[in-house]
Length: 355
Image (tube, rainbow, N blue to C red; front, side):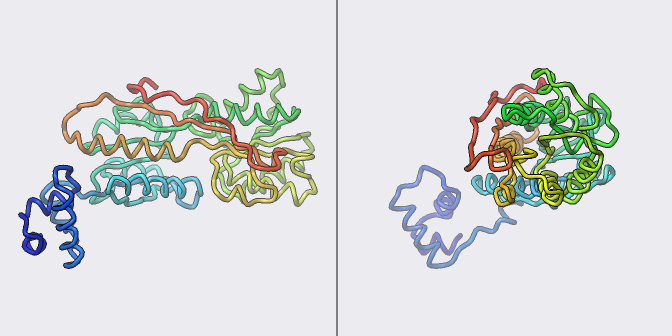
C-alpha cells in the first residue's frame, strides 16, 4: 500500500479509501490510485485485514448433502449473494448424521465470520442448543423452529398444496405422493411431513378422498429411490393418474419407472416435482415443478447474516423469520408444451420471528 501511495502521490489512507470503495474520493484521485495499483499489481492482504478488523471476510454454509442437487444449487446462489458483498464462502456437509450436525452447530465452520446452517436431523426439541451459540447464525429450512436466531425457509405446505391443485386442474383425481417419511409421524417440521400436509389439504378442499395406498414412503430423496418406489406403486395395482414427488430428484426417478412400465407422461400419469433444479428442464418429458424461491432464500439469508456480523455482540435487531415466495412451473410432464411459469405466491415480508 505504501508503494502505491508513493507512486500515486497520495497518502496510505487515500489508497485504503480507494481499495475499500469509500465514496469521499475525487474521481481524479481514484483514477490515479487505480493506475498505480494496476501498474504495481497490488492486491490487499486479506489475512492482515482480518487481523485488524477481527473478521475474515468469509461466511460458512452447512448443508446436509451436496449430492442433492437442491443443496448444490443453493450453495451456488449463496456464493453469488456473498460475492456481491465482497465475501467468500466455505461449504461444509453435515451429512446424514445428528452428531455431526450438533458439532457444526456448536462450533460453526472454522475461520468464518458467521454461518448459514440447514440441519436435517435437529428439530424443535433441540432449540436449547441455540442458546449456547456465540457466533452469527442464520437457520435455513424447516428444522429448529422457535429459537433465538434468524430463520429463512420456504412454503413447503403451500407449495405442495399448489402442486396438487395444479394436478387437480388437469382433471386428475387419483394422485399419488412419493417421498413420505418412513416413520409417518404427524406434526413434525420436516419438509416431507409439511409437503404431505399440503397434499392432503388440497385433496380435502377438492373433495377427493385420501387413499393411504397412494402415500408412498421413500427415503432418502434420490432418483434411484424414486424409481424403486414407483415400481412398487405400479406393482401394487392401485390406480393412479398423477404423482407429486416431494423433490425433483425423486420425480426424475418416477419418470424413469413410468417409462419402463409403458405409462405415458402426461397422458396416463401427470408428474410434478418440487425444488426447480436445473436438470428438470432436460428430462423427457421436461419436469413440472414447484420453484421454492431458492435465489430469494440465498439473498435474504446472506443479507441477514451480514447484518448480524456487523452488529457484533450488540443485539440491535429482533429475531426475524422469512418465507420466500414460490411459484408453479408447468412443463411437459403436466401437459404444457413450453414452460408456463406462474406468479410468485405468497410473498410476505420478513417478520419478528413469530413462526
